[in-house]
Amino acid sequence: MQVTLLDGGMGQELIHRAGSPATAFWATQVMMDHPGLVGAVHADYAAAGATVATTNSYAIHRDRLRGGGSNHYAGANPGAPDLEDRFEDLLALALREASPVRGRCRIAGSIGPLSASYRADLHPVAETATPLYAEVAALLAPGVDILLFETIPSIEAARACLAAGRTTDRAVWLSFTVDDADGRRLRSGEPVTEAAELAREADAVLANCSVPEVMPAALEALSRAGLPMGAYANAFTMIANEFLEGGSTVDVLEARRDMGPEAYARQALAWLDHGATILGGCCETGPAHIAAVHAGLLAAGHEVV
Image (cartoon, rainbow, N blue to C red; front, side, top):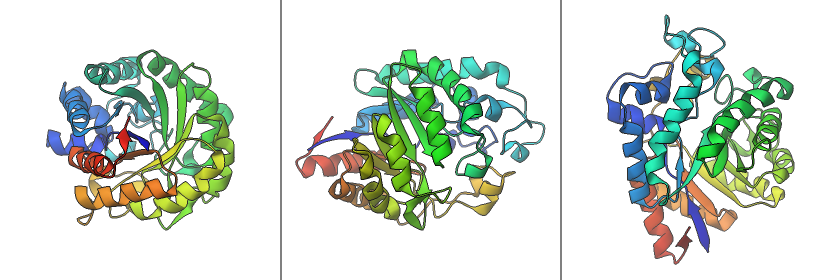
C-alpha cells in the first residue's frame, strides 16, 4: 500500500525546543523570537521520513493576532501587542521556513480554526468565516501544494473552509477534530458521518488533534466521503478545561507518558486497517514519533509516498 506520511506536531515541539514560556501567540511567537527554529523542525521531520511538511501557520489569523481583540486566548497574555499588521509577513515567514524541505516533502499550508481551537460555539458563521479563511488560503497557495484546514470542530466551520479552499487551485484537505470520548462525533457534537458528506467536495479528509484511541471510529465515519483519508492524533492526557475556557496558554496541557514513539506508531499503523492512507502526528508528537511510524510502515511492506 502507498501511504502518505505527514509530519508531527509543530507548536508543542517549538515550545519544547525554545525553552521559553508559552504566550497567547503560541508557536507564532516562537517563530518571531527564534528565527530558523521552525526550519530546523521541518528538517528533522523530513529526516524522520515525513513526505509532507506542514507550515507553521495554524494560528496566523487576524483575530488571533490581535492583542486583546477577538482572540479567545488573548486573556492569557494581558497587554500583548497587536500583531495584526504583521499578518501577511508572518504567513510569508512560515512559508520561507518550510521552503528548504521542498523536494523532499510536499508543502501543506496549515490553516487552523478561527477564534479558538475545539470551540465550535465560538466559530463565526460560514458567511463571515469564508472570506477570512479565503484570505489566508490566497496568501499561502503560491507556496504550497496542499491547503490543510486543521482541527475543524463543526460542519459550519467545514463549510467555510471548503468554500475558501476552492477559491484557489490547490488541493484541499479537511481535517476534523473529534470528541475524545466518541470518535463518531465532532467537538460540536455533530455526527462525523454528516461532516463526511460535506467533505465529499474536498480532495482528502482526515481526523486530527484528538486522542489516538478514537481515531478508528472517526475513520469509519469519514469513509462515507469516499476520499483518501487519514488521521494524526495528539498525545495530550486531555484538553484541559482551562484551555477551552480561554485565558490560559498551552502550558496547561500535559503530555501523556504512555504515548512514546513506539506506542504511538502501533496506534497509527492500526489505522491502516480502517482505511487510512495518510498518517502523521499532532500535538506532543515529535520527529521520533514520525520516525517510528515510518519504520513501521517500511517493515510492514508499505511504500511511503
